[in-house]
Image (tube, rainbow, N blue to C red; front, side, top):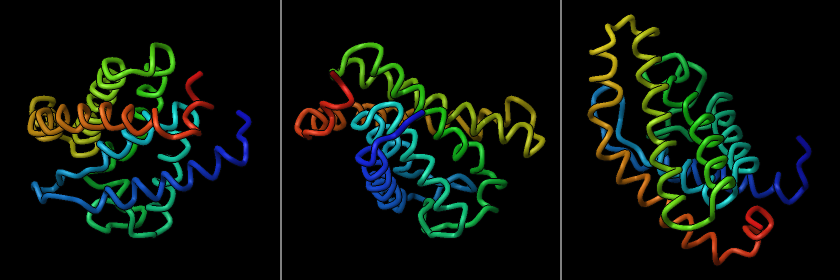
Length: 180
């Protein structure tokens, strides 16, 4: 996968956007309600699959090496092995598949919202799987803790990410390089 200098710079800038939005959190037990999933969908809607997924990977690497960019200013590799680890890993898959759906359909409100809903469920699924296997929880407990309480907030964030991503994406000149 070859990346232009422009794509690398955009990925870095939008990793910073994700970092800023991730700081908006509502404590909700061991798994907080955050704007990370919104930010991932929003960024990928604007940048597309390749550059958007790179932005998410940069964001995750920044958190892994100790920069306080994860939800609530968290940092360090331990976060990737705790209760939120599956959600963090899920962001990569959310980014890739959200971008893939948008790129294979049309860059409009319907498809962007649809892709962001699918992406949000991908992240919730990975988070629940992590709780199942990493936390040795039964399936029903893992999905009750990792998915059920986050469905409505996830749908709201997906709607907002898809809508705002298209709204802003149609106004930014570099998105024409992504969506031809």
